[in-house]
Image (spheres, rainbow, N blue to C red):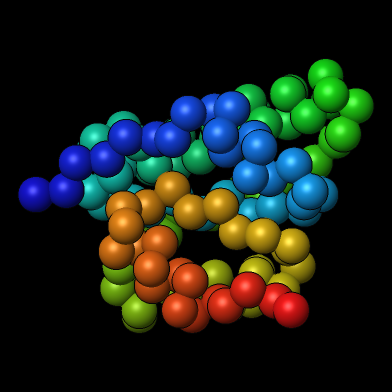
Length: 109
């Protein structure tokens, strides 16, 4: 059984402080059931980030996608055409899903 909890907002905001274009990737199964990373949670987090960065006078461009399962390679293909348009991917999946994303889309030099 997967149990998930979103990181604190201030921590997420800190990690993204140097990025201007971020894709938030949700997962439609386990973390969606936990209310920590499904489509609704992606939308809410993006709204929070957008508002906070505007208040900091450091606007951010945010994209959003929720795929069926980030821990299943066949579903990650939905991201392939999108990731090149962004500086960073913010995954709202469980640890396994995040690991799959990290392996598929290694950090750019």
